Image 1 (cartoon, helix red, strand yellow):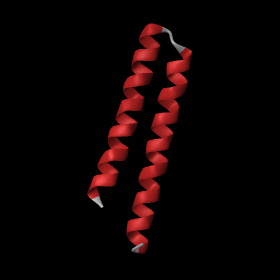
Image 2 (cartoon, helix red, strand yellow):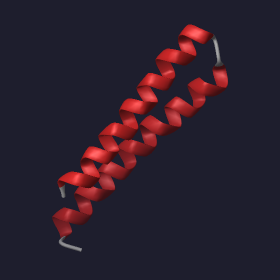
Image 3 (tube, rainbow, N blue to C red):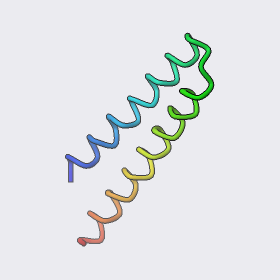
Image 4 (cartoon, rainbow, N blue to C red):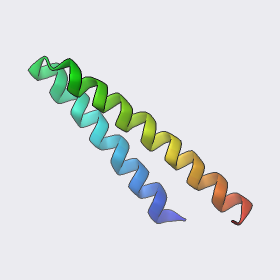
Length: 56
């Protein structure tokens, strides 16, 4: 249970880093990729938590 959640947390942290770099470098495409990584990590984390709770 812990490994998928840690992976999702790292994915969201990578997205935050991409957003910070995009703000510094003025790169709107990288900002969009950062948002996708953050929300993808959150979605995968919720999915992993729900699957663990259900016992599947």
